[in-house]
Length: 475
Image (cartoon, rainbow, N blue to C red; front, side):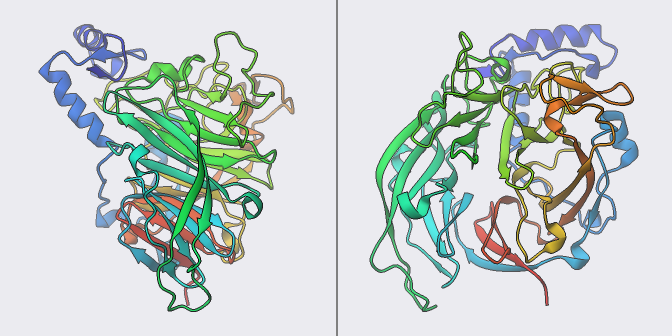
C-alpha cells in the first residue's frame, strides 16, 4: 500500500527529521511507503482531513474579518485579503428539498428544471416551477464506485440540449485497487407524466438513452481521493473537466503521460480536439489542456471576461482560484502555499519561473466545493463576481476582482510577465487581481457543495447533508 505517492517518503522524512532543527525545515516534494505504525497513524489523520466536516465556532460567525492580514502575510502577502461576514444582510434561505444522498452536482435544463447527481449513482430532476422532485434514476448506479471521495460527481447539459437532449456525467468507476474519473454522455427522455404548472403534480420519472462512455482517466489508481470531475463547456462547445491527482500520486500532476492532476478537454462526442495544446507533444496524452493541478473543484467559463475560472483544494492551506489557460503548468506539487497534513513542508517554493501562481490564495483552507460567475438580476451586487461554495468553512464566499496594479506587459505569449516591482506575474492572471471577499451563510452551518442560478438569478445550492436550497432577496 502506498502513502502519498510511489516513492519511499518515510525514509526521506525520517532522515530529514534527524538532520533538521525544526520539522518544517524538511524540503522537497517527497513520497513514502506505508511501512510502519507511525505512517499508518498519519494515513488515518490525513485521509480524514478532507472528508470530515470542520465545525466553525460560534464566535467566528460574526467576525468582521475571517482572514488575518498579519498571519497570512508570511504565506502570501500578494494574494490574501480580508473577507467580511455579511450574515447581517444575508440572502433569504429556502429549503426546497431534503433527503438527497450526498448530492454533488446540479445543472440547469430548459423550462426551469435542474438535474442533480447523488454520490451513490442516482440522478434526479428538480422542477423549479412546480417544486417537484423526480423519482430516482439509477441507470448508472452499477457503473459508479462510491468510496472515500468517489462516487457520482458532476453533471452538465450540452449547450444545445434543447435540440439533442445530451447530458454529461462524471463519476468514479472501478474498485478499491483500480479506479479513476470517468465521463459518460446520455440522452434524457422525460416520461409522459412529467409535471405541469399544477403545483400538486406527482413525482415524475425520466430515462437515460444512448449512454456512451467517453473517457476514463489513465493511469487507474489504488486510492479513493481526489477525483475532481467538475465540468464546463467552452464557447466552441468543447468540454473541459478536472481530474484530480489521486492524492497518493501527486507527482503525476507534473507528468504529461498521466491524466492525474490535469484539466482535460474533449469534443462533445469524446474525441480529442485538433488544437489541444499537447496533441503533437511526444509522450503526452492528447486530452490534456493544462496540468500541475491537485484537486480542482469548481470550473466555470465567464462569457463576459472570456475566461475559464477554477477553484482547487490545496493540502493544509493553499486552496486556490486560478484562470485556466491551455498548456500552462499550475505548479502542484512544485509550488504551493499549503503544507502537508502531517505538518511537514511539501515544497519550499511559493513561486517559480514558468509555473502559474494562484490568482487567489486561501490560507487557511476553506475547502471550496464549486463556483460560478454571477450574471443574474436577483443579486445585482454580485454581478460579475466569483461566487464560491465552501465545505470546511461552511459558507458562500463571494470574490471580487479588479485590474492588476502590477502587470507591466500585454504579452499573451510569454510564460510569465515581470511586474513593476520585479516580481513574477503569472500569465494566467490576465491582468486581474483580488479586490475583496465577502462571506455569507455562516450561520446556516452547512457544507455547501455545488451552486447554480435559476432564470430569475436566484441561487440554488446543494449541501452535503442532502438539501437543495434556494437563495433569494430577503423581505
